[in-house]
Amino acid sequence: MADFYTDTVLEHFRNPRNSGEIEDADATGDVGNPVCGDLMRITMKINDATEVIEDIKFKTFGCGAAIATSSIITEMVKGLTIPEALKISNKDVIAKLGGLPPVKIHCSVLAEEGIVSALKSYFDKHPEKTPPPELEEKAKLLAAVEVHEH
Image (tube, rainbow, N blue to C red; front, side, top):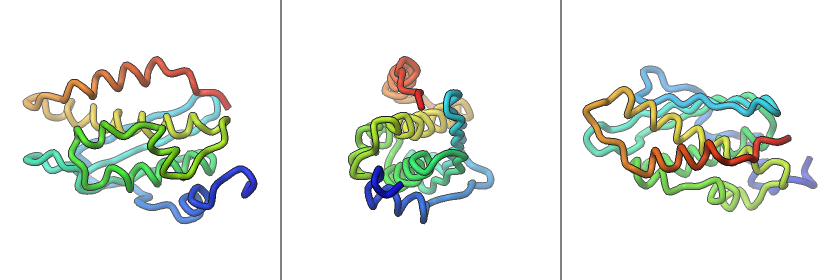
């Protein structure tokens, strides 16, 4: 396993950050990869006035790369505003981890999908708020990505 993964990936797999679930979350995103069976739930606490992601947690059932990408993306978006969080791509996740094997790239896409899914749920719960246009654009882009192979 160590031959395929960077030290950062292994560290986030062995000692995941922000693992768990937020009770009374403002946003919840459930995503999965039907091919390999990875499942991810992202929960967030979002400040309604500032739209800052104040807390974020994940629960992931999957391989080491799925757990590592979940862990690192929570660190990356915590403290950001919704528009800032939407700027983070799976390529940013891969770079922050120092790389992923090509057959595990789908895990970084799953992490990005988890953030988008959670943010969509936030705006579903708050119809009085207008979601940033980037949210729908990113959701459509991710739906068209074909990397869910194992």
